[in-house]
Length: 145
Image (cartoon, rainbow, N blue to C red; front, side, top):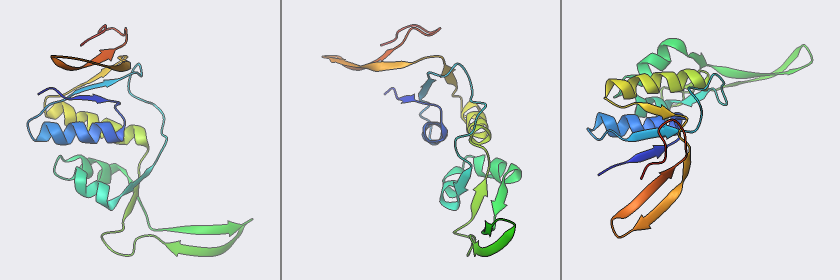
């Protein structure tokens, strides 16, 4: 069985790491030319950390992330309210830029024998009697079935 994961963001990489950890190394492609240097998100919930723990990614994230303890609301310079975020060990919220999270996931994928193929856009699917085939764009790897 062959598995293709389209997109090397946190969701795709988490799926790839978990499959590879179980002995099924998927092919991971991304249309970007390389790893992102930008962050679209920073929050990581405790449940996500639980999922990432067996691969060691949670430890790497926790070592670099900050833990959000609460939110402070201000009106101008005056603090008008605070709200705690970490009520117990199940509700922790960590902050780490998304590009760093992707970095740790990519490292874990490599430890399990996988890799990310950048500059490989997904064009669509075709189907014939032999099965379903992914059509990939003309990146450096060319179109593949």
